[in-house]
Length: 585
Image (tube, rainbow, N blue to C red; front, side, top):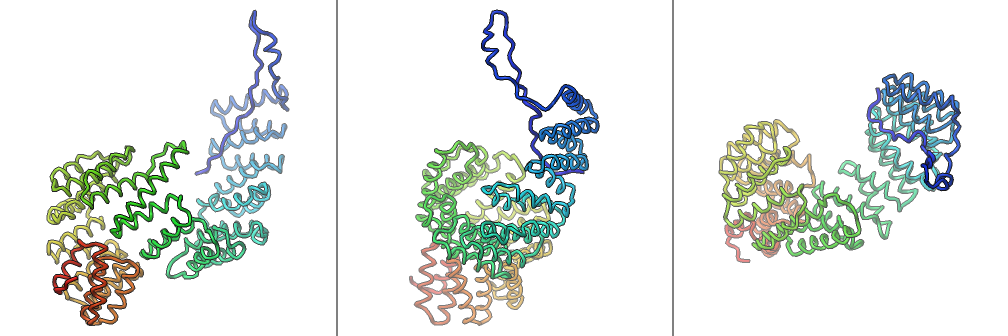
């Protein structure tokens, strides 16, 4: 049974029929028409070919296949062999398709198409061991200018194979001569690395990436393999990425951006921002860098910088689109317009926010635009109208319904209507009782309402359903620390969260806070310093400053709080801390 195999059908033969002169017509024009090209088909073979096609159409593909293959063998015509293969594939006969492809390759040993069909059919039949010879031949047959592309595309051909280890072994054997050829070594080792990675061999993949980088320090492929391996458990992978970036005066921006995304996934925000800034500096017209930089700056509440980055993106995007005929929706441009509207809203410039939203003309993104309009209404105190706007938005798929719910809860939360947000979430949880995201959000609203037993019950339910829900461990542990109760359990819960995301600065903030509550001031200050360096944030600044204040380092505490005010002067925790300690900044 064949599945997932899609092969292009070529035309069987060209119909070049000379026109017939009509009475009184221009006979010379008809005479000057080029004659049909010569064909190896005599009358008998042509007849058999026709019968074969008619037989297939009439519902007897086996007989039609036999006639087509026999005709192909007698003529050595590649297009007829291909037609025989396609008849077999259309009738789901893998063995027959392989028979025809093998006959084709035997008749025309240098045919790239014949070899490609043999390879693809063997993979589809799951005869992976047998693919070694046609795989090697496919690389050998590739033109010198196309060989690197042929090598790099190999993992995609084996992507759906069940036995990834066997596929990796076959690929590595096929590339035996290419990993030692300086012209192809880096690309070949990258392909070996990807195959080993797919086979669940991270150490082998890293070893291949290191050899690929040693073969060519300018090659991007090994760095991308290393990026897929990057984690605290494989420190050598990040070392390889850094080596590639350091060894190249102008590294590929795609590699640096991918590195930045990996750093973001690891909650290493400051480092990620630095990498994106480097891309925007080294390649000022690289669109993804400006979009990512604007998003990071907006997240850090650096509104002026974020606006400049997004406006730069918009200008570059429009210039690029003027030179492109691509009619696909420009989702990056929509994201930029939404962000610019959000920045204007934060500044209470509602007219400007609406103007940015009016620039979104892609129907697929109108839901997000309307949600942002609802946020503007809520910011103006028109909460009833805002909620009605969101609820009235059409739902084209289940994802839209979820977006509407999140938007409405977000509006209620931002305006501190916690009871209404809690009730809305409770209603959603009733319909989806195992949805951990909804349960977590409801727990956070319960905490705002000081319904602490319910909050704990909901968070423990999240952990029960999803044992790796690090946000639930952290939230429960932080709640205990904040109330100065059950501190040993709080520390245990927060450390459990850090097992899943060891670099998350907000969870490090929780751990530092519980250490402070337990009287371990020096350890607390040390953890806070690392967290604030990784992610300058107003709430972390509030906690860090308080520890320094208690330790007698009051000038440093004031400096941290002032930095926190620059980041977000409206942060509730920062405002409460400064007020409680009666500090004048």
